[in-house]
Length: 164
Image (cartoon, rainbow, N blue to C red; front, side, top):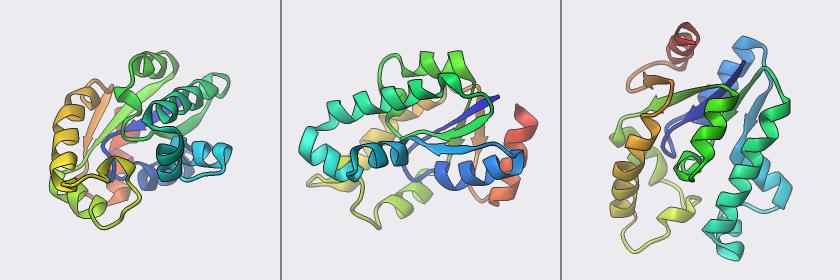
């Protein structure tokens, strides 16, 4: 079984993904980390040097690399499912889980660091709000939707497992 965690930046996909994989005894993958290792650059540097379109292409390539794996948990980048064709790849390979975090939680987590290249704008909060509004309906196409607000990670993982 392949499980793909989707959701907005700062939703907790990596933290939940690592714990979910451990609980299931599956290998864990994070598409953002895979890309950084392959390119030997941070995502921020990739955006600066090659641009967003290049990064989105790398995301799709990383997603396709899971076709040969069976049991695994994959945390995807926040924009991965917004790229045309990526939902179809995920749906063909496994189950998708939308970690639906409260916007206020996301805002607090994301605004405290400068590692998010899409937020390197004059008004990062407006950019964050606009991206959230645009992407939320895309995430809602997931097979499973888990509300994460106020929940302990162990409870979120239990909800995911029960929903699969």
